[in-house]
Picture: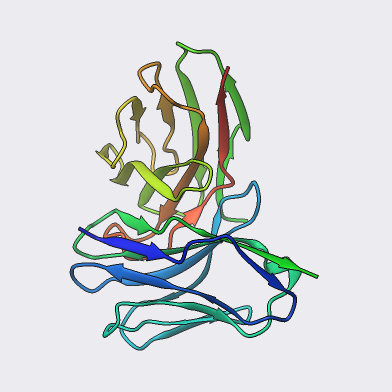
Length: 113
Length: 114
């Protein structure tokens, strides 16, 4: 079956530091890959996505590239801010698993001023 | 504004009682989902529905029930058979029945069993 493995947290960084959160996946078919962000006490919201190999998703300074050869979708940001403190979830949807998304366990990021 | 609403935000229940969580969307999405989130863990799928009057069990459906009588509504009932119901419940929807598109989430309902 499908699975997503995320880098374990929590991750604590100083403001303006470089961020990488690793995500690897196992899937059948041709999955779409997503990063969602969850702020405290809220639901998840889409951060970025990529629907085919070599696509790069980007939003708010965050980037992730769909690497089929390494089955990875690592999240990066060049300079984090305190407001980026949240839980980040990597997820995949596969057209062979209709109606079911697979989520990683989430990585908690804390950015200190 | 289009979106997903969940109510109530906080819900308290006594042991042995059933409780229903509301989820409404005005995005005209076909597919809707219910997830459970426990502290420090990812999301686990409870039920999903790809079309009105049809729904499927997810990974942890035991002790839960749903209905999908209208496209915009997908209420979740937590029954007394659910042994550990205290959790954060998230409803989501997507436009694509195949599940390959972005999911849009509501703000969540935090259920506490007293």
